[in-house]
Length: 304
Image (cartoon, rainbow, N blue to C red; front, side, top):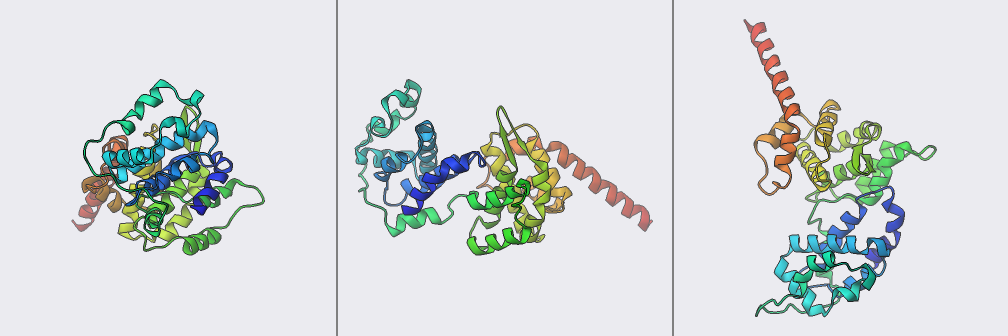
C-alpha cells in the first residue's frame, strides 16, 4: 500500500505529461481491489489522496478493471461487505444522478451467494497487482521517452535501455507490450477534441524499440497488439492506427510478416478493438499486398 500512496500523491504532477495516467493507475488498483481477498476497505483511503475533480474518474476505472479481472457479482459482494455507500467516498455535491444510477448495482441485493471476508492487504493480493495481469505503461519510462523534446535534459537511448533492463523483466508476459505502450503514451498529444501522435518522438525513439524487439517474430506481434490496445483505449482516433502501422513498418521495427500474422490469425483472447483497427488500417494492408505481389512478379520475370 505504501507504494500506491506515493504514486497517488504524485499523480497530479504526472497527469499533464501523461494523459492516460489515471486509467493506468485505475487498472493497477482495480486488480488490487478485486484480488483473491478483497481490499475494498482500502478504497476510501486511496480516493482521499486524489484531487476532488479526478476522484470519480479514478473510481470508474478502478471498478471497471476490478470487474474485468474478477466479475461483477464478486465486486458487488465485496462492496456490500465493506458497508460503503457512494456518500462515504465522494462529497455530496459531486454526486449527480447519472453517476449514482451508473453504480446503483453495487448496492443491489446479491441473493444467497456467500460473502467473501474483507481483510487488510496480504502478500497474495499485493502480488496480484505486481503480476502484470494486464499490459500497462510504465510512468517513468514514459518520461524518459518524452525527454527527446526537453532541451538540456535529453536522455540517451542507452540510458533508456538501461532503465528497461534494470526495472522491467523480459520474463513478464507483457514485457514487450508494456515497453511499446510506454513509448506510444510518450508520443501522444492529448489536445481535445483530437488526440494525435507526435511523430518526431515516435521516430527518434524507435531505435530503442528496435534494440528491444530485435526482429523477433513473437516480439513484433506483441508490438502490434500494443498498438491495438493503445488505440482501443483512446477509442480509435481517426487515422492513428494507420499512422502507427506506417511508422513501425517504415522504421523496420515490425515486419510485414508480423502485421499479416496479426491480421490473418488474431489471438482469440485479444479480440477487443481488433476489428476496428483492422478496418482503419485497410489501406495499409492493401499497400502491403500490392508490394508483395509486385515483388513476386518481378522474381518470376527474372527466373523466366
